[in-house]
Length: 214
Ligand code: B1M
Image (tube, rainbow, N blue to C red; front, side, top):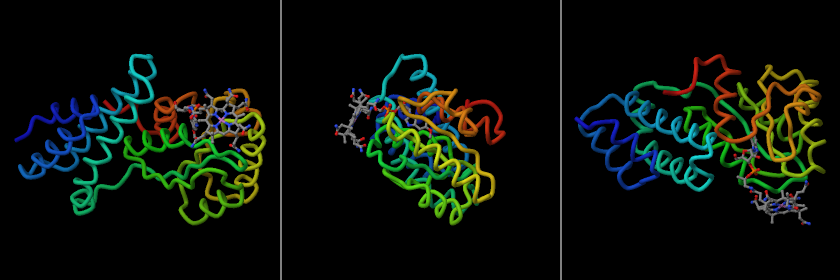
């Protein structure tokens, strides 16, 4: 049996090789896929909290998320076999006219690390494309990112398009450097997150999932 705390520690320090080999060893030892997954989700929760406390920065969070992503790839067939499903589905994109996608990618990675299925629509996504994707995927969450003051109105247009079309009431989360909580309230979004780790806490809160991953 593998000590899953070691796997968590490998993910926390972004050690891809160790994370992969410990995941494979745990699989080979017949450990429960859910327990292996929980160890990694918990580790990313720790990384997220350190990021919020400014103890680690974007690069550390990226390498931890990559270590987890590669290990999850080994685990995925077993998760499917065991019928373990993501806790929710999200679509995410950077709004129309805006090509900045680094922060949005980080939010997508952190949501995936919290066991949320994420359909990433990319950058420069029109309100109509968000609507088409919402109709197609029926997400629980929609994430909108903007980095330019000039593209903030596209967030508003996207929220209006989704609301007016009456698609199955997804929770809309917005973020990006010029975006504020006040703006979120003004345009009728469900929430605003200042960074990728907070976006996980917010998603869990909006989805009614208890607390942060331990
Ligand atoms: Co641009 N750019 N850029 N740029 N760029 C900024 C944003 C700018 C602040 C630089 C400056 O002038 N000081 C400025 C915007 C000014 C403003 O509007 N107030 C600017 C400008 C003006 C432009 C152009 C117009 C420049 C030009 O061509 N004249 C142009 C616009 C192109 C377009 O989009 N149509 C442009 C182009 C580019 C590049 C293509 C060269 C490149 C983007 C590459 C890419 O993303 N693939 C680029 C970059 C890299 C930047 C800076 C340097 C870095 C942005 C970044 O990735 N930060 C940026 C200046 C800066 O920030 N220092 C700048 C790192 C990233 C992790 O942070 O994206 O803030 P951030 O994401 C954070 C949070 O905001 C939050 O979580 C993330 C992680 O914690 N968050 C969310 C983000 N999305 C979220 C969604 C959520 C929740 C949280 O829920 C869904």
